[in-house]
Every structure is written in C-alpha cells, then in structure tokens.
Image (cartoon, rainbow, N blue to C red):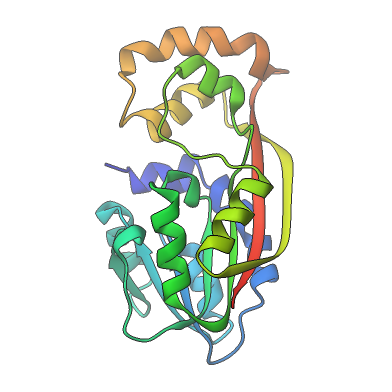
Amino acid sequence: MWDAVQYETRHHYVTDYGAELIDLLAPQPGERILDAGCGTGRLTAEIAAARATVLGIDSSREMIEQARRKYPHLQFEVADLTAFRSAEPFDAVFSNAVLHWVRPPETAASAIAAALKPGGRLVAEFGGKGNVRSITDALGEHPWYYPSIGEYATLLETVGLETTSAILFPRPTPVDGEAGMRDWLRMFCGSFVSEQRFPAIEARLRPQLYRDGAWILDYVRLRITAVRK
C-alpha cells in the first residue's frame, strides 16, 4: 500500500525530475496519451495542459484516489499495466519512474506496444542498470528491474517497438534531512522489507551515501524513446 500524501510531500522529487520528460514527449492538442503509472497525477495534468486527451493509470488505488481528488476533471483508472487493454489506441505512452517496478517486463512492454497505434511513440524514464546499487547490495533481494540500454532496446524490439533514442545516466538524488534514508526505505521498500531492518541498512549505507548533512542516493536513470512499427 502506497502513502500518497507522503509520496507528494517527502518524495516529490520523483515527479519534479519527470517534468523535463514532458518536453521530450511534446504532447500536441488532440493527441490521445496514456500516462502509465501516473501516481498522484501531477504529470498527467501537465500533459493535459497541452490540450491532449490523457488517461492516467496506476496499480495503486491510494494514488488514483489522490489523483482524482486533485484533478477531478481528468480521467484516472486503477489498472495494472501488464493487464491493461484499450479499445482505442493511443498516440503516445508516457511513463516516469515506473517501469522498473513492473514485472514481468516482457508483459509490460507488450502491453505498451498493444496500446499504441502504428507510428505511436513511447517516452519513458525509469531506473536503469546500476540504479541505487549501494541500496540493493544492502538489501540483498529486491523486486526491481534495472536493465541496460541494450537489454531494454532488445526487449522493445521483440514487441514491435523501435528504439529512437536511449541514454543511461547517473542522477545523484538528495533526500531531505537526517531521516531521508529511513523515509525512502519506508516508502519504496516497506512492502518487502521489515522495518526492523531499517536501522541496520541505514548504518551500512551512511558511509557511502551520507555527506555534508544530507543523504545522496545513487540513482541511475534510463531514458528511452521508441515508436511502434
């Protein structure tokens, strides 16, 4: 279960970084766009401000309820991307900081391809190879999928999507305050790691990630665009 209020207040950087991805999407008036993993809907609303018709989907009911409260004029649905189907195809699929959560990735890619009309485009950014490596090393097991450029471009090719651009880049990401790491673990790992482990994980990570009074997480992002053949 996601805490939508905490997500917006303590982890708003996730959405903040996604704003420049909208520039890459370049939504046009009248386009039909799917926001896959819309969270609390802020980026969905920014896409809609370009006069595109946008549908936001997320597997978290809490996130969708918050999105509907904030943007009652927009359309949101609780939906698992791997099972999502639409009778009417989209001009574009947009996804920010989501696809590393969606398993199996092959099914997610197939659903994205099926949602697009021929010539439709995918614009996505998510955790790539090496993302939060210090944290995953400390956790041991984790549910995330962090592919390389080659791995993900090949996957897209198998479902009929041709990669048009891809970049894998480090994005050191500060989180607020002394409790920043604990808050991050609670938000993003609470569903699969006991909170009793948090102090030990935090102590292990402090020498690597805590400096000058702040936690700086070792994010690595994969930004990719593709078109449906």
